[in-house]
Length: 162
Image 1 (cartoon, rainbow, N blue to C red):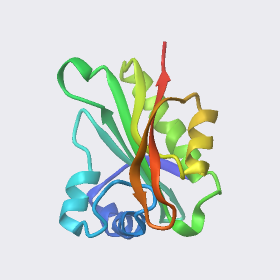
Image 2 (image 1 turned 45 degrees about the vertical axis):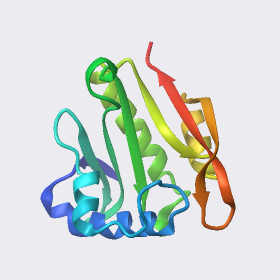
Image 3 (image 1 turned 90 degrees about the vertical axis):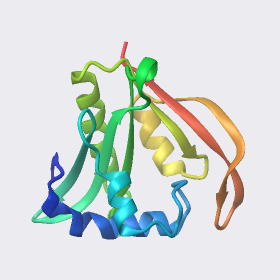
Image 4 (image 1 turned 180 degrees about the vertical axis):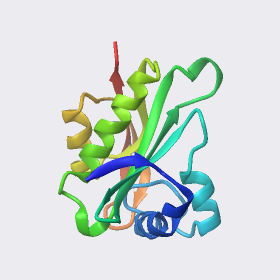
């Protein structure tokens, strides 16, 4: 598996992954009816951010985006998001993408990485994030409407690079 910067030619292979994850409505707070145009605008970062893809034998396995969490006085903290092909979850693609963006953010001089809204029902993702150095710094109770579980909390997670 290779992780590399997203190119325009990748979008037709990234969009099905983004579409499936967003429509499932069980991990992301994006509108499940998000159009392809809006999804592309939301997912594909421009500098100082970065969007990457994990590829193997020409197949896009997953994708990540990263960059400053906020503008201005909060721009020293990065953030990231990850999406993996539903047939490949649990095979290390998400972990590899997360490790890649952590290394990238450190190399860019960010002080840490913050995830603003991790559904507490996303147990597999939380395990990966904690293994890579994140901790839950707060939870907003009932802030995420899970399609099967009802209202669950949204965690704020942080990894300090210091």
